[in-house]
View (tube, helix red, strand yellow):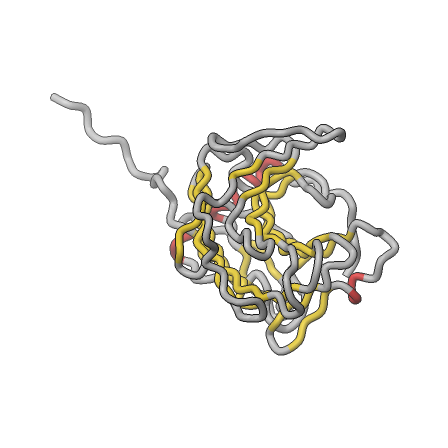
Length: 248
């Protein structure tokens, strides 16, 4: 698995990702399949549970060995949290339901699910982070000039946007450390809706960009992931429907 530091996503890929889902090939890697209606496709395994095929690995330290950060056993993707980086999909997606299960095996830690990532590979790639920080699962962080209607905005010295939308509820629905949690994220048009362990925790509207790759973060401390699946949503509008007859 090679590391890369640049990601150029063609405009056509972003525009068509809601009806260009990925399916597993015989080798387990993801490959695009054209379709006119994404709802005819079933659930897509973004992590196949056997190896890292279909995922691109990025680490902040270009000299680091990704095999020491990302490993797979017993259907689980293990991420050490050192150095920082992520495993992301090869294809961009829009309009989907994303299901992720995670746990922190060695105590409190920090990770996240990266959404609508565009432009080049870097630690804080343009897009959104559905936060998994212990005790704060469901917060949303925004990077660079990604935008939304509800964010509170700050700027760092690098000019990176640090927009945030904290989870409204004070109490977290997270399970005790070491136990498995579920994260269900609906990306529908320009809206992100986050549910943790069956509890609706956050909602963001007017997101720009509203499509991109999806990543599982290596940030601070060990984290495990399993059952990472994506189900395309049906198109909001059937563009092939004929115009209604004129009114008499």
